[in-house]
Structure formats: C-alpha cells, structure tokens
Image 1 (cartoon, rainbow, N blue to C red):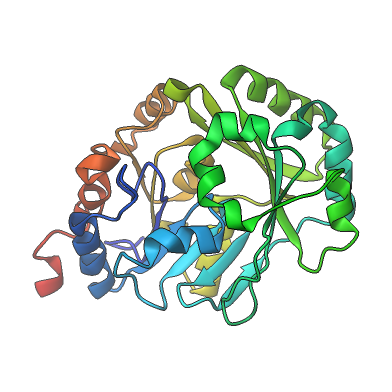
Image 2 (image 1 turned 45 degrees about the horizontal axis):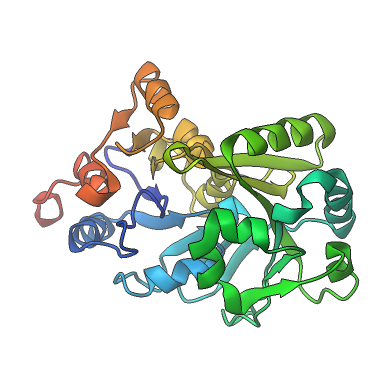
Length: 298
C-alpha cells in the first residue's frame, strides 16, 4: 500500500463543484499540491465529457488530467484524447425503449459524438418528450438545449445514428424512479448496469442506465491497470450513490458531508472519512488528509 494516493478520483456535482458551478481556489490549490506530489487526477462524473468541460476548463486543470465521464462509460484526457469507451449495443437500446414504455416521457439517450481531437459534433442527447424533463431538471435542459435532438418514436434515432450510444437516463420523482429501478432491475438479465443519484430535498432521482459492467468503479479499475496501479493506490471522493463503486474499492474513501443520510450512515458503518460539505471545500479537506500544505515542499 502507498503512503499517499497515486490516483485521486473526484466526483463533480455535489463534490468538487461549488453550488455556483465553479471549482473554488481552495480546491484548485489542493489538487495542485497532490499533482505536484505525483498523484494522477481523475474527475469521475455522471456528466458527459463536453458538459463536464464547461466547468472544468475554468478550473486550472492540466491536459493530462483525466475525465471519466458518463458514470464510467468514457475516459478522455482533458485535452480530448480518448482512453477507452464502453458502448451500448443498438439492440440493447431498442430493448430498453420497449421495456420502459411507461417512462418514455423521461428517457434520454447519450451518444458520444466527439471526434478523435476532442471536438463534439453536437446532438449528443436524444429524447422523445420534453415536458416531464423540464419539470424535473429544468436547468439541465436549458444548459444542454443546443445538444438535444427529439425523435418520435425515440427508436428512430438508432436507424440513422452515426455515433455510439453510451448511456441512457430516466429522471423524475423519487417514488416513480424507485419503481422504474425495480422494474428494470428485474427485467434486464445482465444486459445493463444501473446506478442512481438522489436528491431527497428536491424529490429528484436520476437513474443512469449503462452498458453491461459499467460504473465509476469499473472505469477506475481500467485506469488503474493502465497506470500500473491498484486500488491500494486510490483515493475516491464522492457524495452520492453513483459514487459507491469507486468509494468501495478505494484505499482512501472520502464521503462529502452533504451526502444523503442513508449513504452517510453506510460511511459510518464502514469507517469512511466524512468531510465538510461541497460548498465548504470538502475536497480540499479530503486531499489534506494525505497531502498536507507542506507535503510537496519536503
């Protein structure tokens, strides 16, 4: 086991990013300290790459830092170089459309439309209806409006698709998404991986539907192997249930103080470190556990 992490995986929303949508100077300084001490920085997010970069490009990140996007489906360096990508087969996507008939009004597919140089062609988000999505995730819909394409029926998007689908998403109230999760979990027979991000105070749940075996934890395991590292070299910092697989495998699991109550309870049971809230630079606090302010100067 390393004395300090050689790879640090950090979630974005609710973790690294402040409520105003920025990476604070305190968090940036902590990342710089860890980077100078030799740690590989990985931003592990549910966002797709280009949507993540809208925030990260203002945060003083380095070209060789890694973005593990779409909950582990795709890994690229900050300058857009593709490291790996997990794709959802078209037949699986079509099966999904048929299986979630009662939830089609809140279904979104994400396609990886980026070229080898990291430029996005546009139209990465495909959906059939907009009203329920506007009601539950209005800010996201507005922020991504330029990349949204509507197809009726949604299956028709796959007849002309020039880029691979990498994930799907259902979004809505907690109770409805719990029903959707149970329905899919019982039906998919290993075709897919499911993960949830919950915001109880907003009565909001995002159910991400990923290619088989895909998760943040699986994506990090891939990156660790490529770097010649193991989970004993990994620190993971997150705030929600879609971070669970990376927290479980990390030698240094760090949970944000703003995590849901049931996840905080699990952290206490497993003796994970719980930091301050994301608006209080909880990421900087987590990194300071292993990279104190004077560490890089030794």
